[in-house]
Length: 64
Length: 189
Image (cartoon, rainbow over all chains, first blue to last red; front, side, top):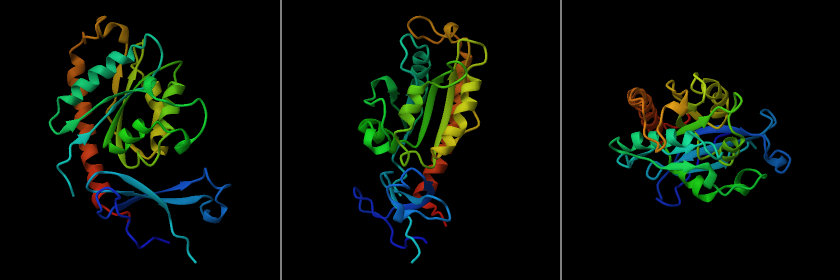
């Protein structure tokens, strides 16, 4: 389930672009509540600032 | 979009060994990148990174390396071929970052004492690049018989490499620009 709220670059205060997603298998034992069991890991979003190029990540919002 | 910010392409020297011939290659590539208008570069020597022998991800990052990877639009990796593989020290350095690499371009220059110019180490690195989220170009740099390519001061002795690297860099810069546009403007869906 996609997050609707755009991330804002902490440096430039502009909206970041959500351009990639990856399954993170490395933290499944420490953050079991975040694991998407259909993928077997945590779905992580990657966002990029169009002004300075900074990258930020966040977990995909899980369906209720 | 701030399309005027320069493209940044650091060159990673991927070995810590004493007497490494790859250093001449990395210096040559860095100088060639620096000639391009609108492109900035730096040589990153993994020997200078502050990395512990073990540990993962954010816990062991070299802050300077992480910042350079974040700023980068593309990478050039200069790697020697040691026993048909890449140096563990290079893999160790690359593995400390992830989010910094996503949807950025990478070109690989292989260096070898034999005639094949590191073709085997380049092939071995390609799946690693993919898993790191980097996008490989279809030009490589192949520096075979490297002991004969530079004099003791590091001066290139075979000028054919200038044209070869020109083609390599043109492809890399094109990919860097396209991927930056995508990262900045094209949403995942």
